[in-house]
Length: 172
Image (cartoon, rainbow, N blue to C red; front, side):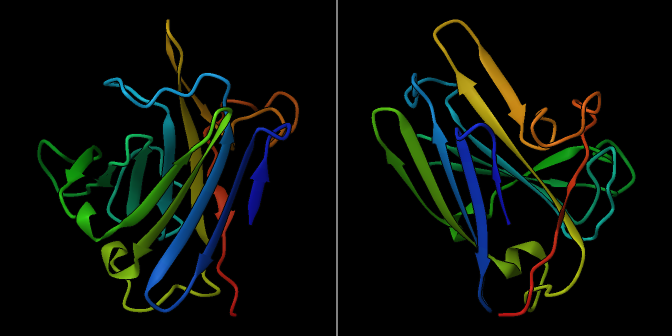
């Protein structure tokens, strides 16, 4: 599975018995990696194919910051103050990631253990959902672009629908 938008962003996934591998190549003329809000890539995974409008158990949101840090927030269905909200997780040390910065683009490569995603084995041939967003910092603003909401990815008039893309791992 790969997505492109006018040749400026490329994404793909691979997997083995231990990890989900994610790679993102983003072309950016103003790469910023030394501020509080840096450029980077958000990877959202809905392993239960919930297509929920709010964060629930089984939905994960990773942020791969160009400074090399990884942030993980998980959905919460637990009743109380965190129900339907993103909850920050501290288990990101299990994720292996590498950021390569060039003058006009960057590459993020990550290995996410299946165990972090609540899986004993890869969920092969199971319908899941994914969303990928780009955080793009300039000197004056920080913008977010979801690949699934881009006009190139959806039919005319459907942009900003916050639709999850179908995501299925095929057998090797």
